[in-house]
Figure 1 (spheres, rainbow over the protein chains, first blue to last red):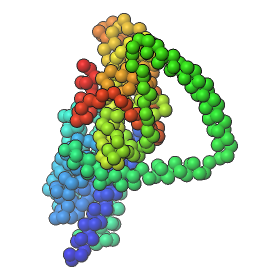
Figure 2: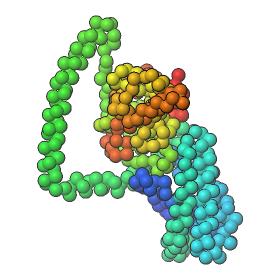
Figure 3: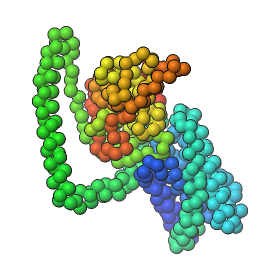
Figure 4: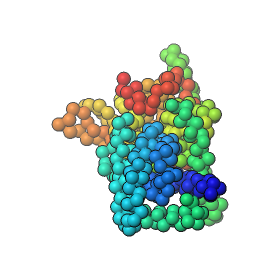
Length: 162
Length: 257
């Protein structure tokens, strides 16, 4: 059992690492706005699937790492992801029984909140930008959610992460 | 705080490289798999370019000598040519609100905060954050960036503000009577001591005199290829440095003084 949970931690860690790499991938400028929030999606999945081992703490660490690699204000992503993790944990029973499209809708709301908090914190320290395009990733993430969900569920079942 | 950030960034450096790997491999592949005819054409073009540059350089040597003599006559300080160092870009900030890039050298390579970065076309930006082996460069078009410039033709000084658009800068407080035209070259003015004098920054693309406004609107296009250059130059600039603790946000206020 113990062995299993350790290996599971490693798998979860690896998916987060993969998320960081994905969120850093260079994209052409015009799609730059529509980059899905991979980290937030991976976090939501693990919180729903294993609320007892992935939660607000993991969200905080992931957020700090994301802050450093994105060059945003230290703590902005951490705050946003903590929020997301908290609400995902609160809703995890309901989300598990939802059909996948309904999950997508909730993911859109959660990631929208993530984007709002992120944008709000950045705006506090003077990053200007008056475009509402920063909400676009919420839509795109919702679109990619079913794919993400199926892949991560396959990963979880293959490696017996529990 | 800054120190902690530098250390976390140090841990993440391999990730940074990993992300850059596909682009690097693609570069390598396109270097290896290339048509002979294409290479020959490129070679011919480069030869012509080298010849032209050589010819310009010959004149430049004479002009530089003359300039130094004249400066000596005026008891001025001779202009020292700046040392440059080649660096490579290894990452781009994915956040479209921030125009930042990551380069492959850090505090271990004697880089300092506020160090100017150029490419073949002109000024790209300045170093705003350092880790040990990587550092972050804010581009001149970032919405928080400002750079003191002068119009090459007339010597009129102003400040070029980034707008958050990759191909646009805006000059601040240009009164309606100032002689500035579309096509004017903007060089760094060297005021505020952060950027060395005389490097090209942008070309004026639009001048709007609106009688309803107290200043004219002047837009310019950066000459550096901000979204394409992979090899950049770091300038070792010998002006007295401002306190390195200043955060990049204060660049604007500093330049406005």
